[in-house]
Length: 381
Image 1: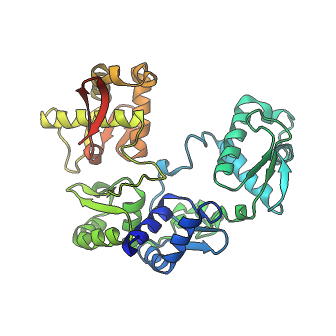
Image 2 (image 1 turned 90 degrees about the vertical axis):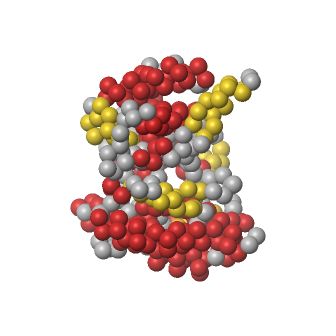
Image 3 (image 1 turned 135 degrees about the vertical axis):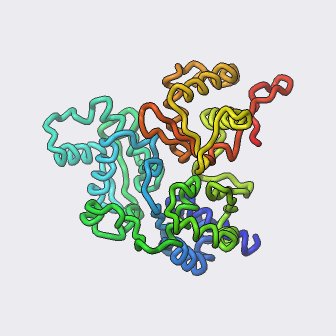
């Protein structure tokens, strides 16, 4: 592997994965370790990120967004309620003093119930709470901070046995400020000095779906426009991204053939296919002058026009969709597409009657082509 390719792969691993556990990914860990001096300096100077390499256990890049947003929550398929978060952080508290030891799930449940002041002994046996417990425990097992030893967690057996590995103590990163101060002023959690423009821009480029000029300060926009050739070259050397400049902003795209360990857009999923088809519909409406973007490149629709477009999309394409989506009523289809596009910063719903569509939604569009019997193939252009 060429040196430049190795550097890019190491940075990609650090950006995409929460951490790289040596025991599970020896080759990847060694690669990061090889480029540690170079990457440590670059990430610290350009993004204000610390690269932590524990010689015997793991490597992790302490990633912090420039601005927190809803799509940056922990895995939405796992953490669906406040109870999920309560169980997770109660589990971290339970870990203290028990590292490298085993425990029964019933022991944790008793401590959790006591900490919550819950008198009902069957509190965690309620269906909703039981599902929360199962989701969180499966998440911690997948992240490597719990090891399943015996019993069936899905059956909610009381005597399921787990072990807490030593690495679990390092799962929560250090905050750049006192938690109490951060709760009073959330901006402190970013660890960014107010005037640190370059780090703020680099973080947005690498952690956000798109950097839109309409969402940036005027001084930042001028800096990006002036420094873009330097930014583009720097990102090309140190990451797997290539920066693309548009009138409305900058997008970083990944051109390497390797798949990502994180979410991609477009993705190999039904909802992503729907989003591509919707983007094609928007593009055609623009080309036909049916819709016009504003100065920032965004398109504002009222709810009636938005639902009419979704209905048109459904009527024209749903015969090629999976049944789960083809059978959705308009209200549910709206909810699913909106949730997905919002996770990529492609849409805003400021109120119940307004839809604002961001310009990068049409960076990639998709059509359904009829090719013999392959009538449901989605192609991007």
